[in-house]
Each structure stands twice: as structure tokens, then as C-alpha cells.
Image 1 (cartoon, rainbow, N blue to C red):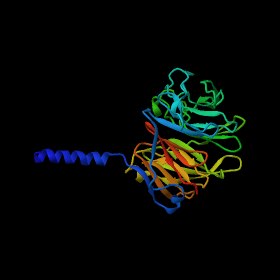
Image 2 (image 1 turned 135 degrees about the vertical axis):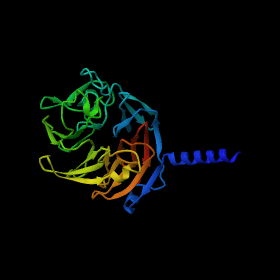
Image 3 (image 1 turned 60 degrees about the vertical axis):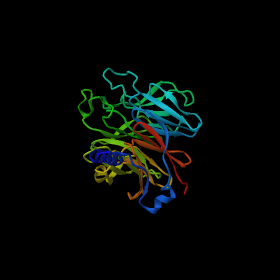
Image 4 (image 1 turned 120 degrees about the vertical axis):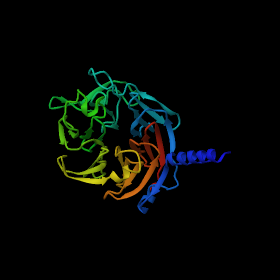
Length: 330
């Protein structure tokens, strides 16, 4: 082989190696060893989707639900059967002309066991008006307007034990994003939907609020900000009446974004208080004080994560795939 050709081949192999996705667990603090094994490997549960989101483990039935937003569908993964279509359409139901046609984003169960969907295409928070075991594309609106103006595109949410709902409303479901002609609100909000139906705007200052989670004692609300110019996770103190105070930066991901793809997004809170948060490179594990305990590298931009009810598995929606990582039980 001519020397020039050999050099070209070696260069191509070197570049391919550099471009290969990095996967695996990186332990940064020994406290993480109680939850994750650094030799654990990621399993692929399904692939070939456009953009996966909203993982939700349903204990009654033992299955995982997740959204494929552009395809307007919610899929179900059952360990014994694999992946199948659970609900279609999941969100773009043609409520208004000019809506994006995107399906549901975040998924969660209400205290009554109903499926709640962040229907970013329909620009509303809705509940499926059908039993979990017999899904059907029938929906009731829980929140869609603030002071007579349509929401941007509800993204992610978390229930408080009192039955109220906290959710974020960035513009990701609008075709024109910030400049969409149908964008009615001049801000992106963090909201509190009280059990009686009253919608309260809690914070209108975040550029792109995205994932949201409550600490186990419900005294801290976490909000991910998926802004390339200022990627970070925020924390708020939750007051007795459900409002927020003491807004602060929980962790600034600016430096990490220079090294890995992906922005702060969906989160899950372990019973130990450890926060699993998707961000640059995959999933970050944080202590309640904001110390980085470990990182799970997925090799793909990772949108969200969820824990199984026994906390033995971490499920991750990563671009075109759904992944699973075995966890340790402390």
C-alpha cells in the first residue's frame, strides 16, 4: 500500500475513533457507587424514532411509555413483548389551524392514575379520557390559556402530593419557535396549576425552561434551562402555599457543553434524593447539594429519563433510541 494511501486510511480511522459515541458510566464521587456500577452497560430497548421524550414507568402493568414527538405517537415498551404503538395521535389533534402537528412531549400519571400529556402540538396540558389499559385519543384540557392567551407549548411537568401540577412552557412546539406568528405570550413560563384549576405563573424570566422535578420532600423545585447561551439547572424553594422563592442556579453546564452535545432537559429524583438529570453527554447524577456524583454517557443527545418503581432501572430517551441502565439498590 502506498505511503500516502496508508496515511489517509490511518487518518480516517483516527477521525472515526474520535467521532465514535462515548458510552458508559463515569463515577466522580464514591457516593454514586451506591446507585450505579461503573461497569454497567446500556441496553437499547428500541430505536429508529425521530425524537424520543417523556419516559414514564407504569407500575400497574409493568411497562414503559415514551413519546416520539415528531411522529405524534406514544409507544409502550413491555419487557416481554418489546415496543408497540400505545396511542396515536398523542397530541396533534387539529384543535387550531396553523399548529405544528407535533405530538405529546412529557408524560406523567395523575394522583388518580390518569395519563397526563404535555401536548406541545396542541399547546395544552391534557389528560387522556380513557383507561390506561384501553388507550384512546380522547382528551380533556387541563390548561391551555393564561389571561386569555394561548400557552406556548407545554413541555414537562411534575405533580405535587396535594394534587397540583408544576409545568414548563417553552416554545419548542411552535413551528417558528420564538418568532412564530401564533406565539401569544412574550415569555416562557414556569407554572403552577392548582387542583381546583387555577393557573398561576410562577416565573417568566427563564429563557427556555424545560425539564422539571420536585425533591422527595417537595421543598425544592428543579427546572432545567435548555439555552445554549446559558445552559443550567435552576432550583427554587417551594413555600407552604405552593409558590416559589429563593431562585438560584443549581448547576451551570456551560463548560460541559463545550465538550459534549446535549442540553439540560428532563429529570428524575431517586428516593435517596439523588437527582438524575439529562444534559451534556447524557445523564448527570447530582447530590441534593449540587455535587456531581457521576455521568452516564449515552452517545446521543438525551432528552429525558425515568426510574422504574423499584429503582432498579434508569430509562433514557436519547434522540432516536430508548435506553436502559441497571441500577443498584442502596
